Length: 112
Length: 115
Image (cartoon, rainbow over all chains, first blue to last red; front, side, top):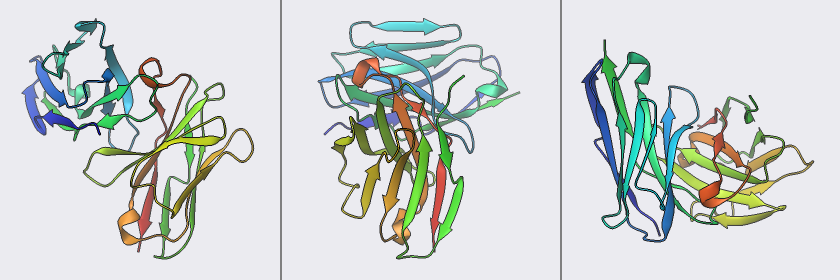
């Protein structure tokens, strides 16, 4: 089955700096890669996703890159703000599959 | 904005008791899921449900677990005889489509504590 590894497990940055979180996956058939933000006591919320037919996607301060050959994808947050502090999860899934395999999560702390 | 709602938010039960966790998915969604998250760990897939039947389940989803959609709006997860290791946050999710076209919308979770 699919295995998703995520690094780092914790990340602390100063407000205004960039943050990068990286994930690798094992199943070459996976072709959908969402990123979720989980705030304390809440469920994961999709913040950005990328499909295997593109290499990069950007939404304001958030961007995701995908390297299908190397089977890794990354989340980039620029100009970080304290409200970006949360746990971030990457995930991978196949077409027509209900199951998403999650990474272990990264606890991001943005210091004011 | 439509959302997935879950009840109860927290349930405490004794080992061996039956527990039912309830979810109301987004009304026009077709695919329904349960995930769980043991404290401090990753989110793990339990089961997916479509067209009134299980479409996929993980090895965690053994005979102690069952799901049903009894009335066209609720989606429930039943744990027949709870164990200590069932203590976790259980998230319901729904999507309009499946796989790489289907954004998952998660509820806020039901925390289950088994004593």
